[in-house]
Amino acid sequence: MYKLIAFDFDGTLADSVDFCLHVFDLVFKKYMGDKAPSRESIYQNFGMNEPGVVKFYLGEFNADAENDFYSWHRELHAEMCPEPYPGTRELLDFIKERKITTTLLTGRSETTCKISLDFLKLNSYFEFIQNGSPEKNDKALQLQYLLKKYDLQPDELAYVGDAVSDAEACIRAGVPCLSAAWAKSARIAELEAINPGRVFTSVQAMQEYLTAVS
Image 1 (cartoon, rainbow, N blue to C red):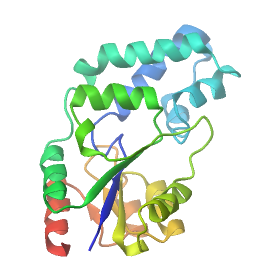
Image 2: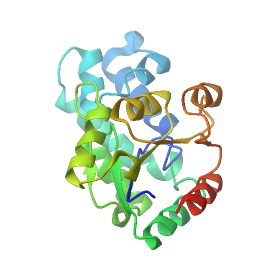
Image 3: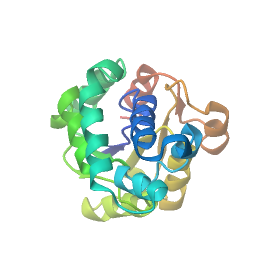
């Protein structure tokens, strides 16, 4: 039985991947013009937080560009990411009712994480938050940290994430991954190949699984 479930954010709690990419588009168009990177290139660097992605393409940390990102992220939230995925609050309430601890493990910066949690009213669900860094995140190490922090056996912790890299991190950490494959960008076949039996194409399906195992 799981004692702690850690959640990713983008593509897991909310349909926010295109939203984040759009904000990056605005920032890089302003600061790089015609040399702005493609969305696919930006997406491949999502393991860094927002200041890290900005530095990767601009060649240095740029406070003005970072602040523009945060401003557009806040300004466009209601239009581009108005709600969590349907069923998300119900799933989090269900987990809470079963006295299972929930934490957040995301590549986002503390700033954008706070903006979104405040806007979507999800703050109260997460006891502990692990944010990203300007370098590539090592989620396997972050998951191992959770095992030590909460004194858990590997099968008592699960990570809910949408990416193939999330499943790979769980394998390295030795903990179960519950693959959130309800985003339109989900790579279901790849997830099934690496994480068979624990790929869920709806929030409700994941809740039904957790009902059965708890």
